[in-house]
Image 1 (cartoon, rainbow, N blue to C red):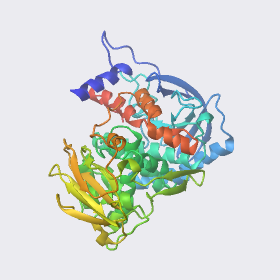
Image 2: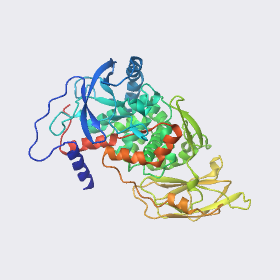
Image 3: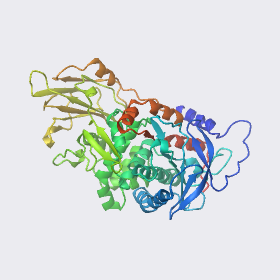
Image 4: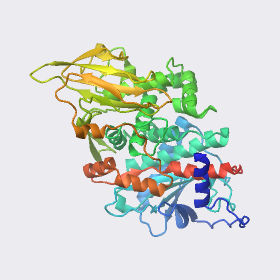
Length: 512
């Protein structure tokens, strides 16, 4: 019922249906005019633009009144043709070709996105893909461009620089959404889960060799308690799915490519399942003996290890490239630097009670030895539910330092420091806290206990404007802005997918 009400809400907001009879089908826009989304009013408006470049796979249009030099524009078209298009299609599959307009080329519209950004705003919309433009113009869908189109923000005040690595990575991200739509929604008539679509879009930059997304790593390390599979639209959740996708790419692409000539994500998009079943089918195709549950638990340890620690005989407990350990990291071709705290900020030190966990979620907690010069300590984990699992790392770098499957009620020793990795590898939320008995420096303070309060999933915003408002007040976003001196990129594609769901709920399908 909640999903039905949400779809009805979007139908009303975006003019899909209505009482009193259907209005006449609107006329299409003229050449060089495009419908775009107003993320403040949650409506649409017309952008007038001129074609400024054409490549083998794309047209580039620039909104009238916006300034991007011709050298940069030609570089954008060339980057799409020579890097993004061939790489994304190999990694994920084909886009709609020739698509709804009968033209095989993709439109890239450079515009000043209406996202309410002004100097001093913490976040902005870097780009987006609107799947409703894959449907015919109609009274239920009056603002369809009837084209394959990607929108990229060129508002100079955002410091999002056309032609930069992050700009190209955003094109790759949005193009993956277009491919994902084609492979799952159009070809297989299934609605894939948001977390998977966003995970693949996030890792598209890796395939295009644009380097790590340390913004996303920062977001997750400052806000780790989220469900992997029940997406809540927070920046921490986007960071979480990025890390998961990066891990999958590193762990399973070599075998998948050897066995099937395709990436692990190509295998996901080319089966008719969705969600966890989709992942398991791809893992089987790649010859893996691990299923989604096993991968989830190994990945939890890898987030602690990064690529700074390799555990002898256990490559599944580390990344091969991405570092999640404390330190300052350069990214975006050296244009940016971010300082990572590691997964264990002081607010999670020596907790005696772990929070409740949502489905497929996890948490990280550090412990230090007792006072009076003691060099060792102990931790006892008392499981609160059969589905929960915990691993413990004894602050060392050998595989013998990892207690992968802790036994509830058993004492585990550590030297100097210890790290507890608490997971709920199941689809059922845990409704109670978990107690910890430990020998540590001091009991947890009231302030620390407040930070790690009982699990409560954030309310998912209903509109893109609500999501932007939530981002602008997020302490994680504001902290990153303070550190980098630049506003935070916002991802809002899932709200546009909800617009499409309203159309599909009425039985409307693409005309090609």
